Length: 197
Image 1 (cartoon, helix red, strand yellow):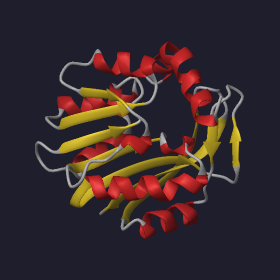
Image 2: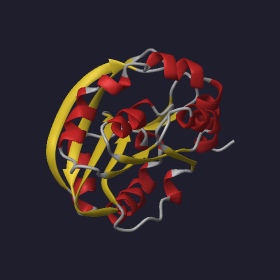
Image 3: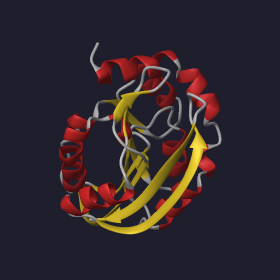
């Protein structure tokens, strides 16, 4: 199994646990900040949507939401939310151009290899309209390694992330740091950035 396949297999097996652990995800302050930057009726891509809780919250606010996830089990859960268009797809499948007013990648791109991040950010920039808003949440730290559940992670410093976003044509407009426990139960530092194309 490749690192990506192993990570996807964990999410397939633990979809119920993940959905329960993040049942209040619609109340995420970062999501509210992101939605506050979007125009009325905005087209939004939730990239790595998990069980679709946040995609549904954006749909309820009147946005036109497309959600993708590589995990079949997560896609099933996301499709249970009315009105959200959900596709099973990996990050590399993104091929849209000038379509979205916002892209929401909340702690999803941390599962890609360091060597692949620049390409994914370029695809996201191409998919956004000029002036579009991009949210990225990542764990901070160093290196690439698996967690105790077998999921692959790449860790970045805040300066590294700023550099990657700048190289892809984004301007960082907001930045929030914190720490919290995820599905594995470990408390890890993170950063959330809002950027504009």
